[in-house]
Length: 319
Image 1: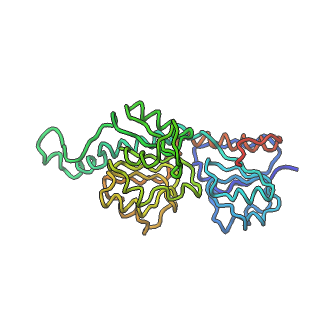
Image 2: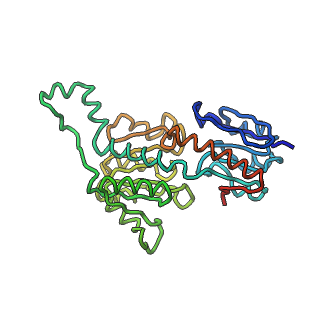
Image 3: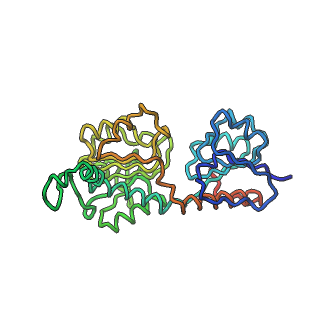
């Protein structure tokens, strides 16, 4: 019998990415996007599901008796109830290391834009301040080198280590934060509180788990002695977003850049939306992962994971 493969949110890969169909007997159905209340209807006959951000919760999984495999077109799997899949004998795979260049590059684009006040200077030029200044330069906004600064990183996976390599190339001192609740931090880790206190830039690259949800809140922002830049190109739930807004507005941090929000897209009344006119805040629409090269690698890995599962040799299984 051919596999029945359903991709519930194909639009997340973008139109220029080529998704090769698996080399096995199958029927293929792809939907541009799928709302949570459409999952059961569209996936009822699926033996294999491909999802990026569509939620697969236990209530829906209970109504998908034919489902045997879920291929997540992303690294993060918090949208899938993995425990419920395990109980039902449904294998789950993800894609890995595809973002090892795109996310670090985006992270440093954000860091450099804030550290050198690029948005503020762009806006000043647009407002005619350069012409009114009457000299060859404007020095109305802070400009700081990365060389000699301290970069604190939360998360020492492939992306965190790639961010560290770029930081060292700029001449930064790199500190990897130990777990927040760790009693002892052994090399290559530095105590979490010390990273907060010493960092000129703090960048988050850890998975979203019950332990890391709300990793940064009011108490943590109070410990940031050097008024750092805070960069979240990881997951939205890692930061208490209202606390970040308070920290920025109260001057406890020098700036913030966010590429992942707890609700995507954020509603008009989300606290971040009132910051979008500030030159010391950048909100990008979860595009750090999304270089064309990275999205093509996602597509390639999804196909490979499906073929490996069908051959009885599953890869990238999520424990």
